Length: 333
Ligand code: EPU
Image 1 (cartoon, rainbow, N blue to C red):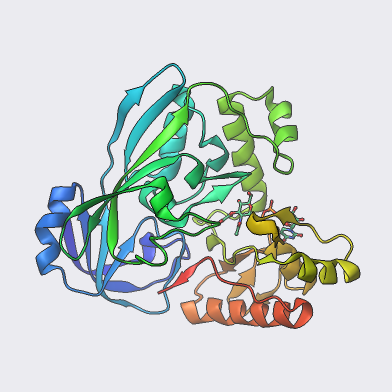
Image 2 (tube, rainbow, N blue to C red; image 1 turned 120 degrees about the vertical axis):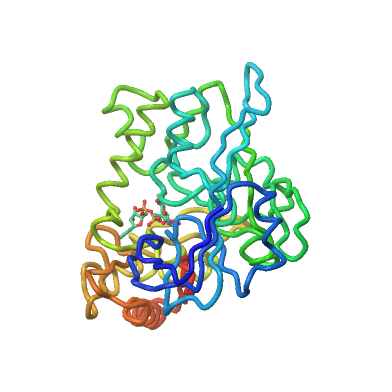
């Protein structure tokens, strides 16, 4: 375990905000975390790779970061494998490990920044797959009393970028491990956008080709946080009624859409933002990425307030034009 006082968070958030926390605790085993809970100075911020946060100021409290980095096979049959993965494993290292070992299920989620613990909190998703599709159990530690609690998939109340850990139980449980069920039989899912075309170009639907196709599509649309600070999609795609969708479609017959749960319709926020004219535009040192309007970027030296000012302006412009209020996927801290 490492405990650092007055710790810079600049390299721990992908927006590159130059902020500090009073202390940062890295824990490597559930016992280590349990051992320090009584003395932990609150408030506590549980952080993974910092790829979904926007710091508005220094954090006056303790940042808790998992360095649980084990990967264990719990059981294996001809069809499936159950793998227990530490919450501090870098998500894409896990995806790469699956590709090498022939385990199907997470290849469409290649190259998503962040760590395994956050994947289960955030229900990360891309190219027609969400983490919830492969999560069996989330093993946690209660920050109030150090007890262990396992949440089976149904108890996690997963939805689009939602889980019980982001809502009812926010901030209460630290994820120690996530148990995934993966397939040992090929299960390519190529239905999203240009994925199938890119996979064919690479030579057909092998695990490695799907992984490479996803990586190259992402590279062509999303900025590298090491070059241009960003947190991926800044907003969630709004889910609206068919009636509201038809109103938009009457003025914009080309509006893209995807079916969502409960007969609702998901509209790409990137499209809505592009239609307001914000794509590629800046407001001070904050900008809308020129290749994907859902991504806000730090052109250099932006503060949390600069990014928020741009986000609030976009929310207002989208609301005025379409009557839809965008919600942020990124959390303000
Ligand atoms: N679009 C535009 N203009 C833009 C961006 C998008 O018109 O500037 C329209 C296009 O019609 C495009 C459609 O939106 O076909 C969908 O775009 P894309 O495939 O890039 O996906 P998205 O809905 O914008 C979501 C996720 C991404 C994920 C992709 C691929 C959310 C909030 N975002 O974006 O996730 O990679 O699908 O599955 O659901 C993230 O969460 O950080 C993230 C990058």
